[in-house]
Length: 95
Image (tube, rainbow, N blue to C red; front, top):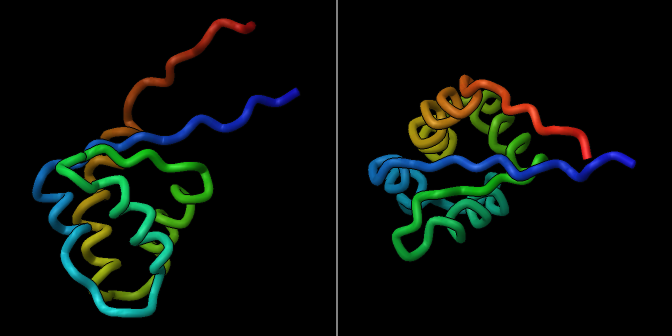
């Protein structure tokens, strides 16, 4: 039986958090914005992304044209995602 996917955790700097929390207009990926902003409330800097939310974040950062929220996502998440993806894989012992 396959294991459920583990969440993908990213920690942002204060400046990266500010880029995401900057007010935005209507439309676009409101559910993505809400999901991320909810996790960054009260001074938190860590975002935990499910597979679906991570996929949506990456697609929105890379496949949509220039825009306010897309640009803020790129400024906030580009470096943390690169750093997170460059970490060595940790192999777990089989259960």
